[in-house]
Image (cartoon, rainbow, N blue to C red; front, side):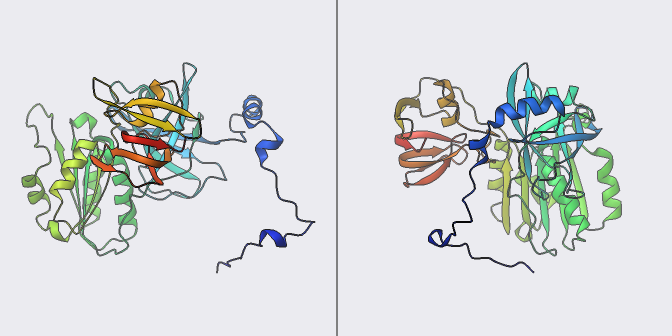
Length: 366
């Protein structure tokens, strides 16, 4: 049983109970972490580190890493993500990766990393990371999860590396003895890029509720169709009864959302970073209230990229609108949600810099 304790009002604190001073006032954590790293690779004060325990192939161009988490790491659940930070050529890079399996225990998780063409971080991790290596990690985050009702029929739709959080949710459902039908539709470019290929047939043989459909869109012999209304009708003719969980590039998610309009429920996460190129589009005046700075920023570019192009460095993580690291308050004015192409001008509202663009008279609490 959890006991709830009412905080003591400030004016009732006794003289013998001093208010703790923040740790950063006592020591410089960046300096301490620098020297601690020379003593032990996992000793840090200001960040959390995980050790790679195992590395195994998930496909020809993807690898699954088993990680041992630090003792103070919060418990994760299937469908969530973590941020991984690595130094490449002296520059710190941070990317978001999904858990590809339910946590086996609070101290061990798995992530699967695809070697994305042109992906600097994914290629570095795919080619160089080995058991024993140490990674800086974030706390788990993300709201993609299974419904509470184990009798609910599910339709899981994945494209590319979007399979990783859905595999985690799928394995979690099967471990919970899910009673409703579970259908997985998984789109990959080729058989070489199909992750966990040998596992799908085995899982179907073990669990009568599960049906897996794989679509190889660039198969040289018989390329499969991309997601469409006709394909969904074949895969899940009873769509109105299904809870749809989808993950993949933003374009895939946008189309899936439209095609699933008649579903019982729809939950999705897109992982493609928004384009950050700036052409001759109009600019608007943006005020950064706390910094006392006013800038003219483009309306077709995420605020995060626009601010970085001006030499500023706002806090950020995934750059995909998931982790909320870049969230800040819009004091006044308007911004556009680039994921949904919707305009919003409600004051004192939290927005994510990586997926919102300036629209009109924008004032940010930055």
